Image 1 (cartoon, rainbow, N blue to C red):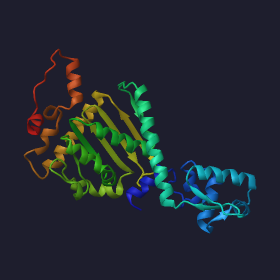
Image 2 (image 1 turned 135 degrees about the vertical axis):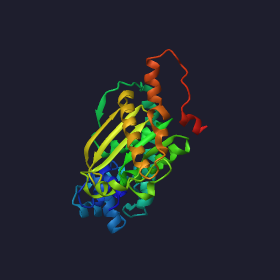
Image 3 (image 1 turned 45 degrees about the horizontal axis):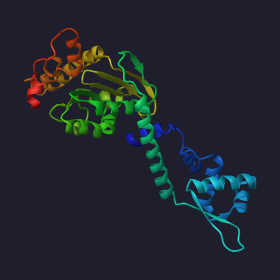
Length: 304
């Protein structure tokens, strides 16, 4: 399986299991067991009356008719009545049903986001928090990359890099400096040198898939995931500017060392704390100074 498939299985909570049943797939969208069985029975056997369906799934007719009424309200089935004939139920094609469910979910998501953001009070407490699930690790990484304003430093295993590539590209498109270490030639760019010496260790010998992400010297995410991306082995996040700048400095040094093996002129020096001065460092410096204006760095000048 691909990394994306592994990740999708982890998100759906079926890591290591066999393929889910059709009924279970529908129940994950909020359908009851009875509703799922009826819809799937209609897909398998075609249109039928409520009486026939009750016989096929061996359930009480009254319960079946109530479930059919709910399915019709959800748009999962349609009912056809003829003169002197019992009501016949037909399933909505899966593509149409899933499209409706997606649109409904997206509408509810937009409404919920607006409501929740209205009551949220953002605060930085500089504590270190564990990140318990694979889904949250990736969602936090995407959120951090979307918030990046100044500089991003990464050390991602290849599969993780692939999954977060759209967000990395979006950050670059906004003018954010993205530097890191590549373990796959596909990921090499002017600020992401290839670490030839560690490819074997990363690909086949390391205990899991690693992720190190530092955003603007303000936020830090460290994670080690199982190779199939279904389990968190270790993961922590912090918005401590102090810790973020410490890891920024260490990761920038690693990137410089990798780059200097092929170019002794030290082209990645521009990523260091002193040269790039991430926003988190500015925050720390302002706490110790009355100056509100800090001098431009070489990276600032390069970006302009």
